[in-house]
Length: 149
Image 1 (cartoon, rainbow, N blue to C red):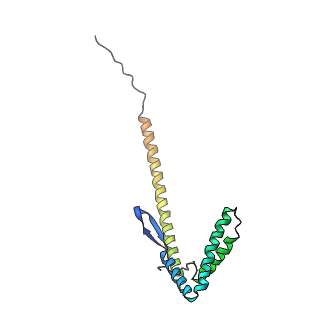
Image 2: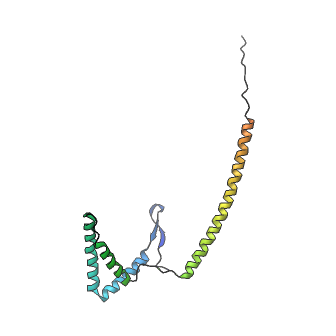
Image 3: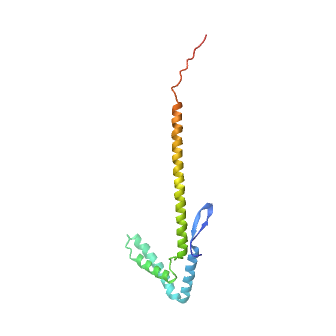
């Protein structure tokens, strides 16, 4: 499934979600569509760019927002023509992921139960140690110092 995003490490240990495979597939589809109808696809791309400029102008003028829905509709149509942006997963993979998630949830519950018991043990030990420490505390002894001359 090379169309799914992948995790990769970037500089200084940062993790990046890379969706390049899906983007490449869509660009290939757009190129094929352009080959079939260069004028139509070119006009759509120019129209999208012009509408972006109009959306920016409307935003500066107080938010009229008439161009944004038109642009989004054209982009949606073009996106549909090149295969869409939805990723339909194989139901077997979904089931496997669900089973793994359930297994992880059960393991997490087991860990939480063990951790809870350990917390109770530590609280009891701490209370006992505190009680013993307070029991050992007695009134301070008075020490008399005498000087012999």
